[in-house]
Amino acid sequence: MLIDIVIFDGFDELDAIAPYEVLRTAEQLGAPLRAELVGAHGAGTVTASHGTRIVVERGPAGDVDMVLVPGGGWFHGRGVRDEIERGVLPRTLVAARDGGAIVGSVCTGAMLLAAAGLVEGRPATTHRSAHADLRAAGAEVVEARFVDDGDLVTAGGVTSGLDLALHIVEKVAGASLAQQVAREVEYERR
Image (tube, rainbow, N blue to C red; front, side, top):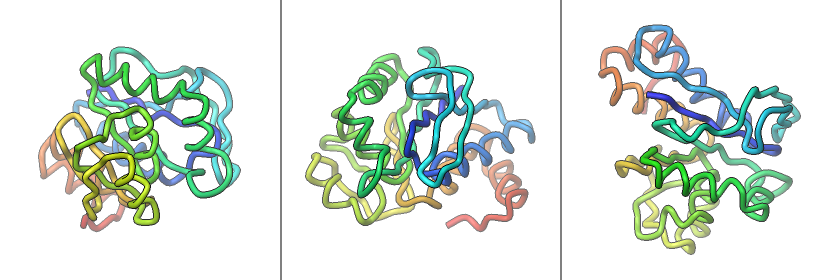
């Protein structure tokens, strides 16, 4: 399973890095998956919401199995709102879904999925402070750490990305390997 975690200026670090570490740890332990951090607008330097700078080598690929977007900047600052205004990333998400990829989000990254029209009438979650916004976008908001609706997966606020990533590992490589990854990163699944 190939997974692109798409980052953009203003993304929340933990929303992207936590799932990335879980997924890469699973790969190191033998899971048949590969996660990459990629730039929403191609190769270059991306500056996260708390100032972390990450150099990415490419933009989203057209042949991945999953595209995951973090949140950040929905309530203040740059980030999700800027990406919605640009319109490029929401179109990328639609193209990924239309190409057969699972699309997913962590935290307010769900608002990017909403802007792309991918959550309407579907169960989804986001950071609790954005539940009303997600509901207004037509989603059936579920108060949960993560929601798996087949080709749409969403995680609640920030640290729930760990739970979503471990869920993905379990689906791809089994419960035993997911538990091994949880032990490795010293995280107690919820």
